[in-house]
Amino acid sequence: MDSGIKERLDEFIRRKGLRRTVQREQIVDIVFSKDEHFTADELFGRVRKVDGETSRATVYRTLALLVEADLLRQIDLGESQITYDPNFLEKPSHNHLVCIDCGNIVEFEDGNVDIQTDCVTRRLGFRTIRQSIKIEASCEQLRLNGRCQNLIDSRLSGKRLRRKR
Image (cartoon, rainbow, N blue to C red; front, side, top):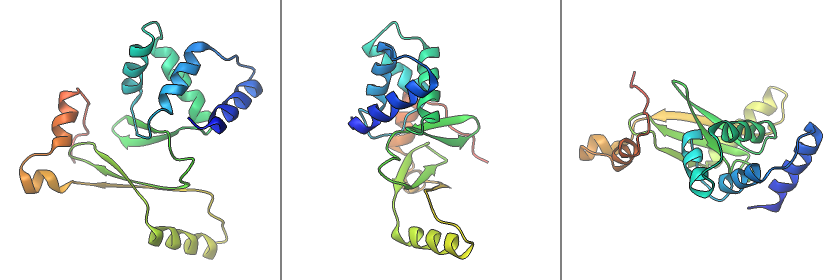
């Protein structure tokens, strides 16, 4: 994990008058150990493997703290489904393609989108700080192959998928 993340979190915790706890430290280490999106329940499962005593409430409070500290980003997938993104700090231009069939999330970068965003913001008298685009789409796997491994994996893991509109 990047030492800057710990420093920013420690400073944020001091400003809020909170204390450092072993459980919070473990959760933070787990959150930033992988560069992938996760749900609160997925994180809770990973945390419980390391420390069976950590409560779901502690995980949720720590997630809220990390979001408030601007170290973690929430992505609303709709229908009350929230996923968390730990790697947006390195990529201020942060775009996601979300499959409405299987729930797979693909991050993408596109210089053309960045240029377009810059043009629009300058024309309207703004300066871009960060950008986040979410595109909902249907992956080709189901249509072309009649099956999608991401959908199978999601169902096997018990992940609740969005209802199609």
